[in-house]
Length: 174
Image 1 (cartoon, rainbow, N blue to C red):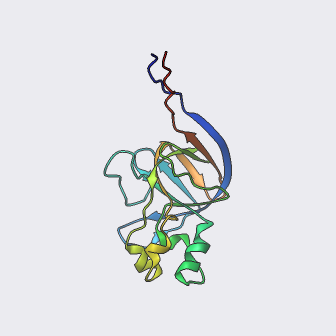
Image 2: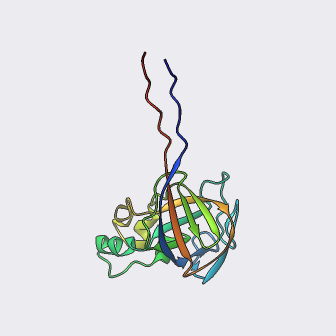
Image 3: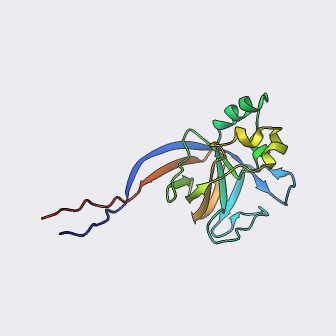
């Protein structure tokens, strides 16, 4: 009888998009700065952002899909929702953000690894009105750790590379 083996991860096809917005939270609950560019620092996040990851690599940079803003606004009965209201670090368009841990996102020279979903909190009700948190359910974006730092600018190309989880090989009986 053979023992199960694990296949190496196989990368899925890459998707391309664009960096639309950058947000730096300079202090807790303070106004979010919206610079045209930012330095992305491994183990830290965006330079100047007040948030310092409490555990290495879990939530260094947060991203949201720009196309979801219209649906969030519609669900909340608002004419518009802007990325600054949601307090994520980056908004990207033209790609569907991956949800799988280990998936990779490249923005210009920077490489990020998805660590999980960016679950909306009750503050979204403050930012968007009653039902804001519910409107963002499934649309809150992703958290990432920085694999390779560097400088990013609005307009930089965004590439998403989805990984395929390893699958165990079947057993053969003889």
